[in-house]
Length: 189
Image (cartoon, rainbow, N blue to C red):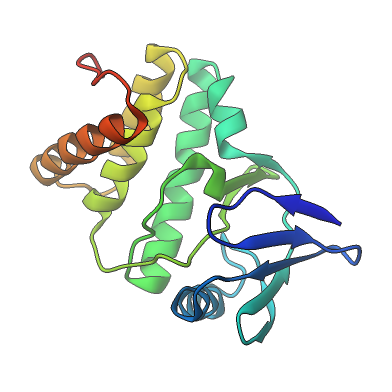
């Protein structure tokens, strides 16, 4: 059995190749199960079963988006952003809600597709709010500034975003995340 890192829940890969996630909260379990049912494996794991505070899903073998992003060239950053834009549009269209925690550990890159693996905190919101969170994480991760710029601009060019709304939301998210991580607020991205 393999154990995955999670702040709130217990997540393991069983010997049968199934992800078993035990939730600390019934509400979080309900939200995740509801989202997985709606997505039906589209850019997300397939929900296999649900019992009380436990869900079981298919296992998606691949690399964390974070791992790929941190070592990406500008060209690879653009490819990752393009794949992520497809994931965001697909999930947003299916759920008409946004995901909340945009840590790049919540995304798996597998076979030229990106999958979202955490849906316990889906919430009302628009694409600008979702992307503001993504952009804040992308900006504060320790990688080359050119890679960050290419990644963010590629997402901006693909997704139907209202620039004024995005800019305000991004500044707010970046400020909050920089303070939480105790990092210098970047001025150049």
